[in-house]
Length: 472
Image 1 (tube, rainbow, N blue to C red):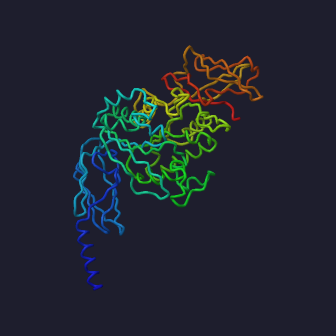
Image 2 (cartoon, one colour):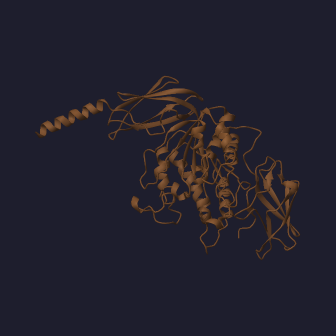
């Protein structure tokens, strides 16, 4: 009897293996975009030790590999210049065909709620101008993928989501920042663009990092069992495991990132932590220092979200930490949003500006479009002349500008470290700052508050970030 049972199980197992079918992660699917002109990695599962062949219709080339004892397999295919649609055929004895595949530019779009915020907005919080932009959004050369929120202590192999062509219906529910970024990149490069969004509102930087990367940074202990996760978007490592890990290895051009609001009260560690996160992601992909462009958080009155009786932390310190990263980590760039904040809403309605400033960075730096810049001017040095501080800037070939050549966002202090509102005016390439209350100034600050409306710009219209000359 036992022998018959064993024989029966063998027959059933053999029969099932004959009908085995390649299974692919959700992001390898009909309608996807593959990164152009690279060795694009593909992977999936089938029966153990099964031979898998992959045929690409753009060149008819056949690639072959053998699954391991767990049925996992992977290989790389050579992608041509942008074009399509194409088919990719997977065959392990039974064929699986991906259709309507485009070759173009792929970007991963990540962060917290300001990246997650869809074109339809949040309740009571619309996206400015989105209704008409959604109406005009139909474009078969823009493909959208949104990964489902997933928080877990164990690294995942897949994420729930599906590719959709840009239509009013699909764009309505898609990240506004990512859409405006991709729309402009696609328009200017005239190639297909694929956008993969993995974002979770309120998520901490720590949630997108591994335990190993976080060792230098003190924090709460990482839970060891799933039921002990008290904050699914803020607990360290859980979004790396659930949302980023499945994508590691996907052929792509780069990353755009909009996060920092959750870390605003931990600014002292953010520059090092964010730099570590970027370098960690790059190490995992193993394709070098891919572009990593990010938004500086916009001004907002954080007293609204501060518990009664607690100190209201100045988020300008977090903006300062973010500004340091692009000077420390190669091939990164920051889109300054000091002119788009809203006092009572942490989700600025002007998402077009955020997306397009990220796109300017990519178009200029990554795609080599000349005649435009994505870089905001950056404070460089100061000189004290009597009762006046004179400020100089870098990345400002057309100098600095402001309405009527004056700014209302400066303060100035003497050796007592007490800051007073100051008059600030522009003369040629310099900004001059003084106050009748400070006869012997030693430090100046610009826009260094939770809520401010940036009023200092470069000649190309990109705003200057908040900054300070002191390190107090």
